Image 1 (tube, rainbow, N blue to C red):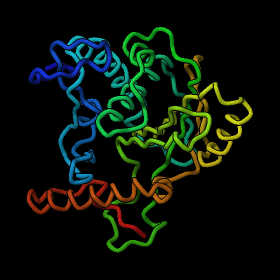
Image 2: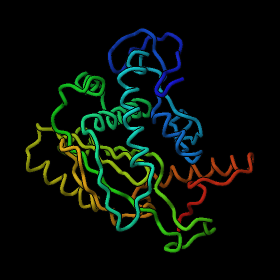
Image 3: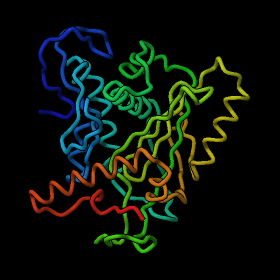
Image 4: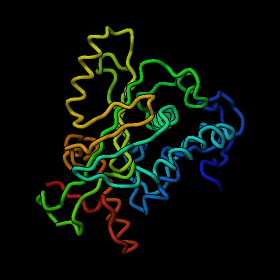
Length: 291
């Protein structure tokens, strides 16, 4: 099966979240398959269930995307970002590093929005269904106004810089291979989309400004957000960004994110259970201990 190809599911009353078709619905990956393949078993996801959040090792999917969209435009976006991953995202950035990041802004933004839109539907997130947004992700035309995208390069945490219950058998704790966090736009005045998506060291912050709110208010809120994003660089249609590593290391980033800390504990317990059954080496999640 080629990258991005969906798995047929039974007919339902649902329609495709992108084109509105009710035919040939398939399962779309929340995070693309290539991320799971390249994480070498260290990518553990947290799924939202009726009984609460649950860690799973499998690839999470959502079944409301038709084959035509799944295997066509959406697969093309995954293929593009797969290439970016092999050239950039797959490498851990360290203190003092500088990256000359070359990219196609439109395709990257559409992919970030695709992942955010998929996960929002699966988890009940804060990206509402929008014909304009879905069309832009699918076709790359008529980009909705107000998008601001920032890139922040997160560095690993040296093991020696922390106190551990059990010292990890590694010199550093690297960033997570893939992660997304949504900000609550109900309280974020002036924005109607806000999330951060990380791929190892590369942490993308995506915002969509609500132009119904006065510009000075939006600017003040964004300035406040940027204070917590040291080293963040705004990406533009120039399709190139020379970005220096942030002073923010992975564990410091984790400590400022209570949801992420809780998810890491869920993933750690899950990984410990897998290790007991399979007697395999632990992943990054198993090595992390709260200081």
